[in-house]
Length: 141
Image (tube, rainbow, N blue to C red; front, side):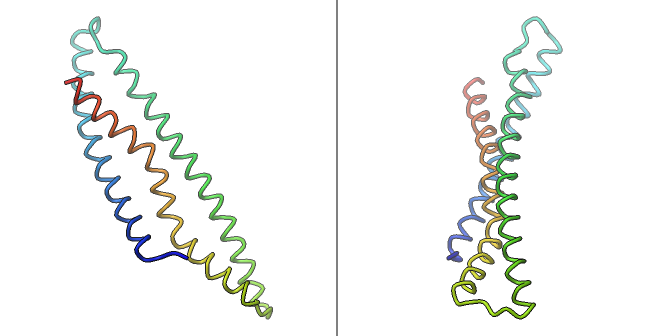
């Protein structure tokens, strides 16, 4: 059973993660812009380790986010198909048992709350990469 408090916590966490990711991304872009500028001025002394991270870490984080979304969307599609099947049976005159009715109610609640939870799960690898970079680059100076 889904509670309003649990859903509020998910909204709060999603907003917090998005805010932290945006703040971290701004700091990382500023630092890396200087890294690119320095590389253009003096290519022999450029920080190629950092320059290489700019693409590879994004590919890793966004691939993990995409995989998470794919898994969640497939699960939601299964739930939706089951719900449509049960609703169709009802519309055709089949009276659901109390257990079937309860299963439909619970499925509806999951279908309502799953998209937000899915978004939070997908945001985790991106948030983790952005905030880790912010901390690492802050130490680097």
